[in-house]
Image (cartoon, rainbow, N blue to C red):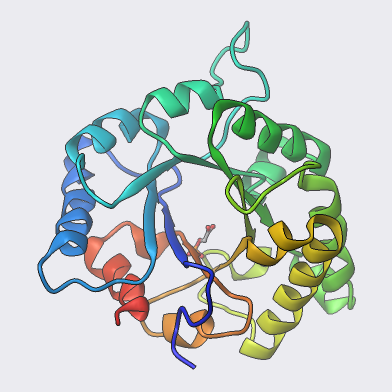
Length: 257
Ligand code: PGA
């Protein structure tokens, strides 16, 4: 099977996290240029989630083109007295078409619960953004045999009712694989993604069957093809390797046809 087989168009999203100053904008331009090169034949959507401070400048600099942009978090409200927070509407106006919600770093650093994540996903929908909802077990949970039950619980409680394939992307990111260079085996990824797919179909029917399921956690140029050809993996959420255009493009090229 080749990467991207099947009818779901894959998505490769780069999460820059708290990295990137204006001097790094050229990395996004390099990605944009590679995607628009005459011989580029990438059968996937490609997205970058820069820090909020760079979103507007990056979206403007890369427009027009096939590269799309996401925020890394949003508040549940559209506006109000929430110092330091950013709403989904603000992200949208700044050029985002999506927002990552419930990343494990936000769950850990900011105490975000499944219910908060669900509210943020609903806020994304209200603003017309796609919510990229992150799930994943810790190493302790995996070693205790709880990976599947943890992911199932997060999925059930973090995804809002009425979610559609257009407004929702699920990213399975085992916490222990993020930024560590460790990855689950393809069989383990297949097991978790299979469970996510079954639960989504049970709850959302055809919309659940069509939702994109990303794998995230230490996706690199040298393991992308193996991870991205696993059943029910419809793309990747890439952290560290998305900061340099050359590495990110090497991952995106897993979908070159
Ligand atoms: P990583 O991060 O690719 O650096 O492991 C993935 C993520 O946190 O989205």
